[in-house]
Amino acid sequence: MVAIATDRLTKVFDDGTIAVDDVSLEARSGEFLVLLGPTGCGKSTILRLVAGLEEATSGHVLLDGEVVDGLDTRDRRIAMVFQDYALYPHLTVAQNIGFPLRAEHETPDEITARVAEVAEELGIADLLRRLPRHLSGGQRQRVAMARAIARRPRAFLLDEPLSNVDAGLRAELRADVATLARRLRVTTLYVTHDQSEALAMADRVAVLRRGRLEQIGPPGQVYDDPASLFVAAFLGTPRTNLLQGAVYADGGRVVLDLGSQVIELPSDDPRLAALAARHTERVTVALRADALAPVAADAAAGPVLRGAVRAIENLGHEALVRLTTGMLPTSVPESRLELPDTGQHLSDVLADEPPRGHPVRHTLSRMIPHQRQDEPPATARTEYGFYPVYEAERSAEPSPGELVVRVPSPRLPRRGEPMTVAVDLDRLLLFDRGGARIRLDRP
Ligand SMILES: Nc1ncnc2c1ncn2[C@@H]1O[C@H](COP(=O)(O)OP(=O)(O)OP(=O)(O)O)[C@@H](O)[C@H]1O
Image (cartoon, rainbow, N blue to C red; front, top):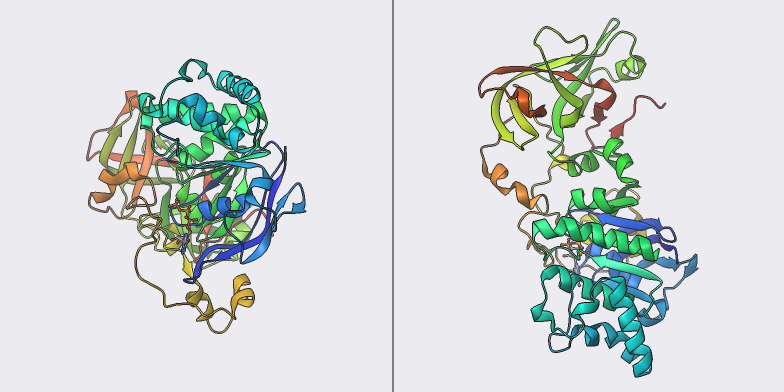
């Protein structure tokens, strides 16, 4: 299997849209790499560049370390599966799977044998005579995968292949797709805007925002150790609590001031000096729901936050409890996930004087962009780029400074009740005003 790499890959479309901006990443041989980001962040364009369906403005695509920029799509031997499967409706399953082989001029016997082999591998051998319209969504998905692997591709590119499947089946198919790719040990680039899907499937996740790579790492790492506020905000359900704060150091005491409440660091905390050096700095404090644990009002030894229960969402084994706290949500733009990411336009970069060393600025300063259009991106397929399932929640009144806490079901509080939560300081994340992570444990 091949390693797929991009080296400073950049794609600016003719209308000036910077779809991919200086992206260098690698999917190792046999790896399942998920490209994750909001709609319009450039995921599909990266796939199309890797497949050779689109020409890069600058930078390179490499297969096993070799630059393939000039290589024809067919000669790259990479299979792509798109979200609409694109099965031929008038052809049977067997004919659909065999179609790419016919184009390769294989003999009918060879085609029949390979179709049977692939169908067996995907558990669809009994469907070979059916037409696509007589298949379920999941079965169609498998046929599309079978067709993609029939040519023994060196790599798989999957573009939101599960987006047309209903939620229940999605979870099942997601496991199927990942298992299949791993069994075949095909290097796979898998595109999704669904963070839970990415975390569940990936060997590593590459998080993209506005055409740029924000972070790449194993799911546990991008979740627990986000490099930026955007990554912290984008990953995790329920959404990470993101609060406005400021650092205050007074004598030996260091506190994170959250407006109406404070988090004080213990006097023996190893991060004390590093945080004290940021006295009066404004920060975003990120606390995932699982970094907060309900405690008795007077029992906690460490720092606590207090609030009143505003809403309880019962999930069966546990509930998500929303507390009003009097604190303020962060105002840093990188934390806002509600709108589709409209991306960057070349005119924004070129108008940005004095030059700030933007990587595409130099490559592209000779191009004359058209005016930016204020229309939403043509590829935006959902009204919201993020968590479409949270629609109902978003339309509710915004509640400033709310904290979301997980509470085990047997101990559910009542609405309006006061609640105290202990803060796990090891899981508290800090970001600066630009949305970059503040790491207190490193110089
Ligand atoms: N042919 C094109 N001409 C101009 N702009 C384009 C073209 N194709 C894509 N774009 C723009 O490039 C940006 C990246 O698009 P891309 O389809 O790669 O995003 P994406 O992350 O895959 O989004 P989605 O999740 O909605 O598929 C978007 O702003 C999109 O509008």
